[in-house]
Image 1: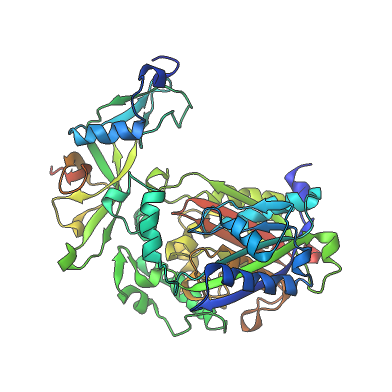
Image 2: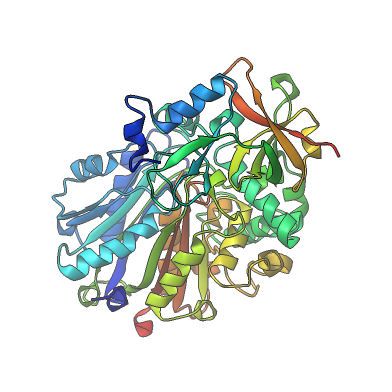
Amino acid sequence: MSSSAAEGRGNMSGAERQYFDALAQGQFNIQCCGQCRRHVFHPREICPHCGADALGWVRPSGRGTVYSYTTVRRKPGSGGDYNVSLIDLEEGVRMMACVVGRDPHGVAIGMAVQARIESGDGAARVVFEEVRP
Amino acid sequence: MTHRDLRGKTAIVGVGHFGLGQAPGYTDMELLVRAAHRAVQDAGLTMRDIDGIATSSTAASMWVMSAIETLGLRPTYIDGTCLGGSSFMSYILAAAHALESGQCNAVLVCYGSAQRTAAVGRAAVTEARKSLDPQPYEAPYHPLSPLSSYALAARRHMHQYGTTREQLAEVAVAARLWAQRNPEAQERAPLSIDDVLGARPVSDPLTVRDCCLVTDGAGAFVMVRADRARDLPNRPVHVLGSASAVWNRQISCMEDLTVTAARESGQRAFEMAGCTPADIDVVGLYDAFTINTILFLEDLGFCAKGEGGRFVGGGGIAPGGRLPVNTNGGGLSCVHPGMYGVFLVIEAVRQLRGQAGDRQVAGARLALAHGNGGTLSSQSTVILGTAETV
């Protein structure tokens, strides 16, 4: 990794744009620091752990665990109740996401989940589904 | 000089509030000015004596300039930092430095919001903030902001420590019992644990009764050096210790949802004040949601981590309980105009002056007021004491 990863990118965009551009192409990436080797999410320009300008993109396994969750109440006519969770990825980073494809009231802390990209009406986003044993 | 040298060197000498509840027809700034005027009057000063100001707004990023203009000040000390609801505690340590160094002689800390009745309502401000202050890694999942973040913390605390729904409800019930002793509190009707549990669920496990009020209101206080405070009409309330800590902004970036930065702000504030939680007579904790009170009791050291639920159980923080907490009725039952921190300072001052009426904690000498901002993001602690504690 060069002393300045940004220089090597020429006129490329910042990390946030790169993340969402990749997501729109069907690719879920997180960052890993070439200096301290820790994974990073959300995307940043420099490593929040060691301060190095050495962040590169990696593809996470997508395997995660529910760290906490809430069921947001919504009228049935507006789409009904939905889940909002914090997911701990296998790589050691946490992200907010929805657990989908099941009754939101059945989500539990510790549940094993797998990421997938959902591209509906809006912008692409990462969601998770329960991994059934 | 170390920050410990600032212990007791400054004092709050005036407090004031205005428009609690609903104040239709007033702007945020007009409410602020009314509260500021009362606080300066209460201090025995005039607006011409004010040469320092600290204020912020949830909507306007250059708010302090407007406040200076409207009040007609020429301050030599200006603080417009916004740490959300804890801003008004966070101003205290910086103001103490500025007063002690001689940069200024009288600091006015002030806040006003007409969020309940304003023409530009909360929904519009929330919508505008989505583009001005985007949160692209959380917004796509539509958490209720800020409620769902606190719901996530509550759920994790319940999972990790066995905290119960009933214990969360105890916090709301205790606040209501205190509010019934405060004629200025906005919600004073009887409230039971069953009422809280049976209320409309909003973001599980929290119901609408786990959430603070949405009101108008303004509050202000005035700080001067302790030597000057002696010549002013009110019993001075001395600043013994204060500290702020921020570890994250978004709830998804909080390392452990059961441990807030109040652990750090509290430890530093107690170190500066030279006292411990056991010494504190009356406590104010920023109760935007019921889980807050439990988390801050633990993180500030009033009980061990994980014991907060049991600590508040059985009326533990209600009138007659083991520790008087949120004696004004709190954000849950007294007032909550967007950012609530200034009202925690006002209540602590009233308790230490012995002016708290039916809710007065007998012989209160040491008070702690703790502010929270964002989604358990900013934490600011202040420890205040009567003259005999200095």
